[in-house]
Length: 216
Length: 205
Image (cartoon, rainbow over all chains, first blue to last red):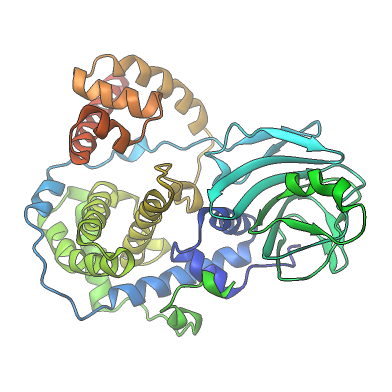
């Protein structure tokens, strides 16, 4: 049972197409896993549509021959709609089928440090990094905090931290200076988005730098 | 967090009730139905008359450029024309369906402007088609067939298809390389796609 959901502002920003790709992927994947948020998104889309088309102060505009040009095209045949297969990725000896939002990412490259493996998903947004993280059974990430936000979407398995236990589909948003140290008993696969590097809170931080760089 | 939320969204967050189909909404659904069943040009002209200025106005607010706003009108209305049969009135209003088409196209446009990426992610973020089980095998066969048909296209069209779908170039890169306007690439691609479709349909008959 999914207990952690994106808030209404995030749902609205996603439905309006205003979130960057990194967070849009997380929203889309959560909605695929969560019927409750899928239903909310449908309502929000209807509302956004209503508000957008309500625009009554419209300028005169000259569309030239656009209408005729469009109607000279043939419609797309009903049975020729291509459906992309979902991406399957192999890590920690398992094959995982990823949500539809990851369909374009079919050559993920995994690299590892200790119990943690990472595959980069997005690194072209300013300061934002988005990755798939796999943490092997009994793996622990040392206590750390983030200067910015950290979004974790749990795709498989479960993990826990100081705030609770998380299950498949949970959408965990941490904003600001909160410290936590996630631990997974049986292993888990997550999608993580961060907009600033991790800071390890307790000693030995130099030793942990490679881990910090890997996770960010 | 706050920075992520665009302005003018307060309305949505107060979620007032959405009315059932009023006269205007019913008209839009009927027009879409006419376009879907018999490519009715009068009905499509009505849709265009209603939506084109509204899409343009939305595009101007969002992108601040006339040319970009016009591209949004052109591509959204083109998709409405070509995909009208995908609209399912049981799943919501026609106007909402058109909104999602515009939203998807503008997401991809924004990504192109900001990151220079033409990866068309919106289809995966907002998948609209219910997947059927036997589709995957068909897809595989189709890929093989398509490759054999590409060779039969006229040279200019074949070049565009090969460079974009096989060598992963963006439309803009190709336009620069060939020193032709982006629109030319787009129209060659569109022609090529419709020819490929014809070839494959003949094969199926």
